[in-house]
Image 1 (cartoon, rainbow, N blue to C red):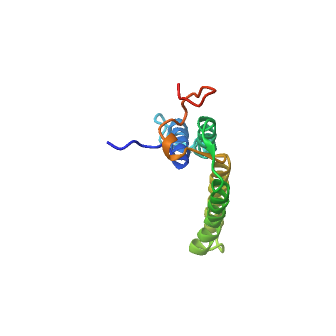
Image 2: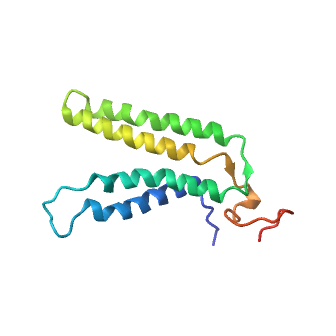
Image 3: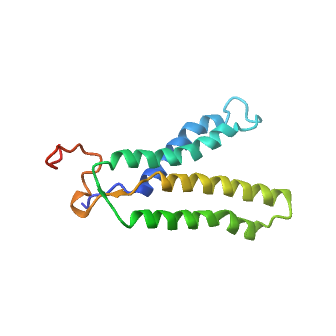
Amino acid sequence: MPEITPSPIMHIAIGGLVGGLLGAPLITNPFDTLAPPNPIGYLLVLVGLPLGGLVYRIRSLGCQVDSESRRLSYVGVGFTAMIPLVMAMIVGTSSDKGLGLVGIALIVAVSLSCSILTLGVRRPSKGQSDSIGAERRSDGIDV
């Protein structure tokens, strides 16, 4: 069975999933179904995304610095910045509902951009792919 290398995107997705699971009790109220959802529950998902990036950054401290990862991060942030523009082209901005959807897309884009930038520039090499998060001795051997 092939080994699964924990990629940066997987850490961001798991961070968002954990934030969503923590925010689910705030969004749905099982005791009062007519109560409005608490917006903090939705914000926990957006906070979980950069926290997943920070977890990857901490776990990848023993990895090598990848010279191309910074450029790819900026490309990813550039494409993420297009989310509100695409949303504005799809729904339009002439109505209040359209402006609200574009605003939500802007908040999500900022959260994803922060997540991408917090990943850092360290990536595991081919021989190091199974040792992310493992402790290293001074002679470079995994503990």
